[in-house]
Length: 68
Image 1 (tube, helix red, strand yellow):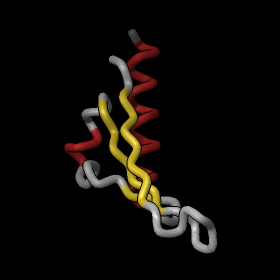
Image 2 (cartoon, helix red, strand yellow):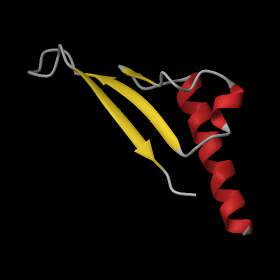
Image 3 (tube, helix red, strand yellow):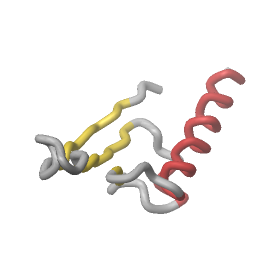
């Protein structure tokens, strides 16, 4: 049980870091406030394709589901 609590806290910390300083071209449209970070069961992300590649005009949507 304690391990699950530590894992949840670690994931919340990592998500906060991603929101404060996201990687270039990445966004997290469903994570915008502190209250959103408490629900870690489903995380949505969007990644823009890198410039000067065949993916440059693409927007790639990702849904990460984390079991309880």
